[in-house]
Image (cartoon, rainbow, N blue to C red; front, side, top):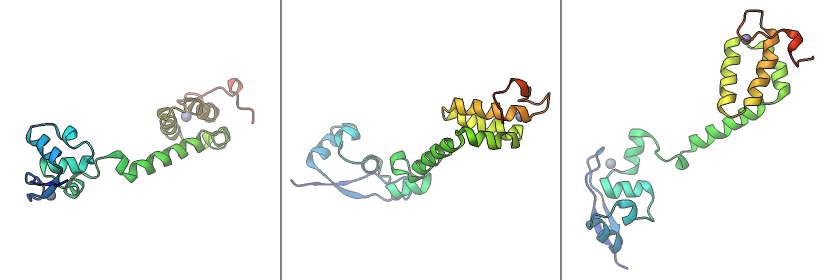
Length: 151
Ligand SMILES: [Zn+2]
Ligand SMILES: [Zn+2]
């Protein structure tokens, strides 16, 4: 199968055109005005962008950072680290050990984070353990005789 030479528009970042080789079907589809994702369904998104607009993947990355979550290792690390954080801080004994030593601001931040991660029970548990340490009038004050905390 012979390929067609194709010159892209000038990249908006470095202003250089590139030449690439398209399959005859891809070239014909593009000439006919078929959207790039249909004209070149087997190519990666950065490659399609390069064909369509001439933007080089590395120029795009330099300007905006990686665009595709699955190609961005930071996203994966952040997600895994976050899951691990929630796993550890959702443990009842962690809450029992630490909740009374955290300030109201710290508890609020932690409870918000746990709730955002869907760990509502853990969030409530931290509040249960923190409340008795607050003074009457403090934001989370729980009278000691109504708490489940029986240390
Ligand atoms: Zn470029
Ligand atoms: Zn408090």
